[in-house]
Length: 373
Image 1 (tube, rainbow, N blue to C red):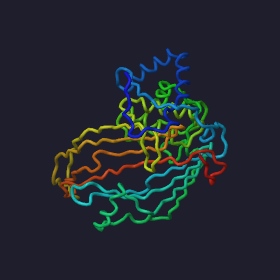
Image 2: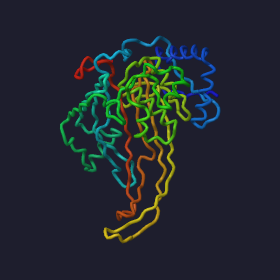
Image 3: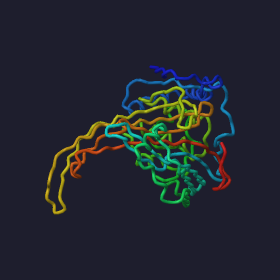
Image 4: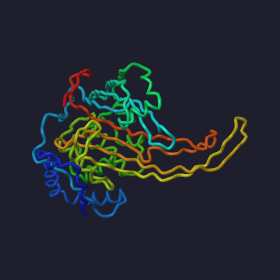
């Protein structure tokens, strides 16, 4: 079965009518040779994800070869593997009036990461003290209500952390290092590899994909694969090339439940191909017991919490298959929370969206040099 993507709201430029053609031709040649293995993997994946039948989302493809020299392509340990991202470093907010739409304020920061082949590294976070608003038009009413802005960061605007040898290979590290050079480009084989957490590079020390799931908010196996693919694309990494990035795009785009958004913009206006995955968390009922310090029970009962949907969205560059951004948002953004033992019958929980913007990546000669892209 073939699912056509939604029509984009704006047609891409002529030079990017189609994406990833070179990677797809490469995949077809491999499938002619190993079709029996791929068929077996496809059957295994259908069981793994609990779906019947094959679902294929048509993928954008390039009309010309991928440009060279802009991304990591060397598997040799040269200097440091560098990434530069932008993300929120502090978030706050709430409705201006009871029951109103939430207004968010946040501080953004630039995070520069250098990782050496031995797993040591350095990370520098630079905070922009200018308060930003979501959406930006809400700044005027927020100030008119005399609501406080976020306080300035408690410490310096720039913070540096250094990590010793092997740190990037630990469980749930602040910094990571992935070797992509041994990953297959066949979609079925790559999906299976990511799902199992095996990057397939023998004798190489690197961050474990299995360790990433320990801090995941995913409710499904599909989400775990989606999340792991995002981590591989964000880096820092060794051996990244257009074919492997395009293969990771195909893995994500063809997971059950993933929506193809066509051409969209990220938070800073860069245009690219968007994918979205929505998880629906069920409502829950929890028991509570209220006790005084002396152990006397004052109340007991149950509270019901509403269900929560989590929306994961990514944007890919159409020319290089580079991941431009990833983000998470929630529905509903404002939810009632019952707190019977705190003397409050109900309070409000604000779930603010978060995102990561990949600005630069590349090889750097030292841990103070910025790699260009």
